[in-house]
Length: 134
Image (cartoon, rainbow, N blue to C red; front, side, top):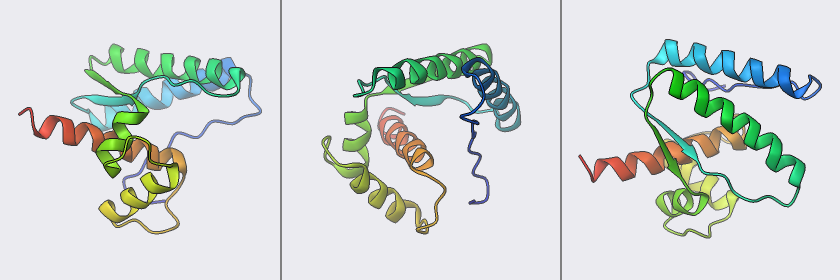
């Protein structure tokens, strides 16, 4: 794993409630450790599998709660906004986003996961958004 890269991993075999507690606790630890000035998250999107939408919604709620409890301002971006900011095309594929993130940050092919790439893409989107408003 890359230095300075913290990825919260959840154990699928645990009950949902326990996974959410673990997510909350780890996120609170990371907020205390890194003291972020703000957070960027992806807005909800519809997925083919309804169960995935509900699970993702639960996790997203925990993330928003943890950030709000720390007083961290939250900025939300749609998947289309993120793709456009990273690739110039709001309809880009996951592979195109990953390629651009790999090139922009000079990552290796062994970068941890698609989730970590997505997080970097969201952070990049936020960076591009704020650099023109400051």
